[in-house]
Amino acid sequence: MITHKWWKEGIIYQIYPQSFYDSNGDGIGDLQGIIRKLDYIKSLGVDIIWLNPIYASPLDDNGYDISDYRAINPIYGTMGDFDEMLAEMHKRGLRLLMDLVVNHSSDEHKWFKESRKSKNNPYRDYYYWRKGKNGGPPNNWPAVFGGSVWEYDRTTSEYYLHYFSKKQPDLNWENPKVRQEVIDIIRWWLDKGIDGFRLDVISMISKDLVFPDATGENFGEMYTRYFCNGPRVHEFIREVHDKSLKDYNVMTVGEGPAITKEAGNDYTGQNRGELNMIFPLDLMSADWGPDGRFDPGITDRRKIKSFFREWNEALGDDGWMSVFLDNHDSPRMVSRFGNDTTYRTESAKLLLTLLLTLRGTPSIHYGSEIGMTNASFDSIDQYKDIESLNFYSEAIKNGMSDHEAIRRIQISGRDNVRTPMQWDDRNHGGFTTDTPWLESNPNYKSINVEMEESDDSGILSFFRQMVAFRKSHKTLSYGSFTDLDPDHPHVFHYQRKDADAQFIIILNMSDHTTSYAINQAGAHLSICNYTEAGKREELRPWEARIYLTAI
Figure 1 (cartoon, helix red, strand yellow):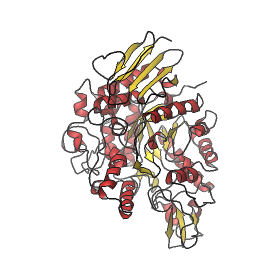
Figure 2 (cartoon, rainbow, N blue to C red):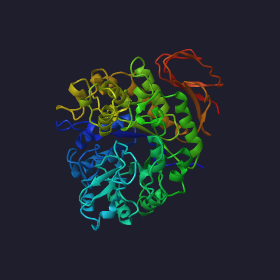
Figure 3 (tube, one colour):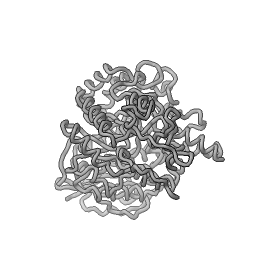
Figure 4 (tube, rainbow, N blue to C red):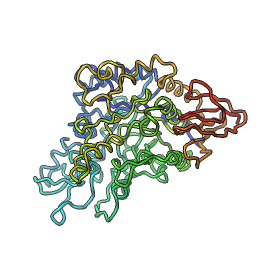
């Protein structure tokens, strides 16, 4: 039987702190900027704010390289600013979800600085150090951000492991001292009063200590086979839960690279004592080719449908997931899954309908409530993200044209979803009075909060309507999910049902008018993303409908 929890009924609003609002005119978003916008966030109807990392960091990977887990990065403010922000959130009934990165640290963390000094240093085993093999690295694994996962260090003539950037050495969870450090960090923040953690790449914390060479796999296969779901991952997570998380009424959501639907309940089952929910990442790679993010293809709408159908079937009433269509690691949802030109408004509303009628805890990335789009910058000099920059460098080195490399980054690069929030039509979208750390999307003059606030039929108004609708019907949080037409190439037709209500949701995920039979007896149209009613059995481009029907 499914249990009712506050975090199952909540709606998450994700903020990328550098890009949300700059309060002091230095071009970088900050904690005081977030405080100034809390009334806006509250007005959306969301419950939980997820902040990307704000800890001390050299920002090699925009904060996912932490140099001090108990300090605030000065670019965002002070610990006093944090305490004020948390108090102001709680005053408004908003909860704070912190992003915690414990698969790796920064190479500028004191642990790593000590670890690299000598083989006998007390911190040596906080990280993975290995001798080379045949004059090269210990094995042939490629890092997520390019190059090898092994970096040679001259001080001790050994290599250290890093799944991501060379400035992000992987922590050795085999060492019980490392696990205790993580537990202490978690308790320190929970004692400050935060409401939970989003745990970055948590499925990677356990390694195959043999570190075998990969044989013939493409990157996606290697990533799944060697990097994730190691032999002690559940043991490690349970230990963290038992020694910290279980003592607090908080939520945990684990980012789930390579966690399959079959393994979902191993992480989130009600009696597992591990995580409350996971972010499954299958959908985020649905349009990737065999070489990963920068090998883009076309998303088959049936893949989107099958993702939600199969995950719901696999989790059942035991496990739970957070549902999302974009985040800080993926392109803007309207550019990826919708039509961000001719039907931007209609497709943005449809995608919000999808997000807010699915089973699971919805998570929306800042700006998607107003239909922000990919920036698609046309010069590599405009990009900041380490993954895009490394891809470009390697692609050019391997003979790819500048045009093709930029085209791929325009489609898939992470900077697309990190551009400054578009508040109004002033310079830089009202985000800052200085030069922003990352260029604003040039379309801020026509897509911004101020314009949306004045449009009762706009995307923002529709988002608020959908949030209120979901909250007024717990069926949309807890009810069963049934895909009623799994084989249709672009219409997503599904049912949400429990003892209290039954909803039929019909989404035409295409640029074309589609004839579609709607046979539910006694169906009452509750919500449509078009302002004027259309023909009952004719779906307009990107039309979304929600019907309330008799049980």
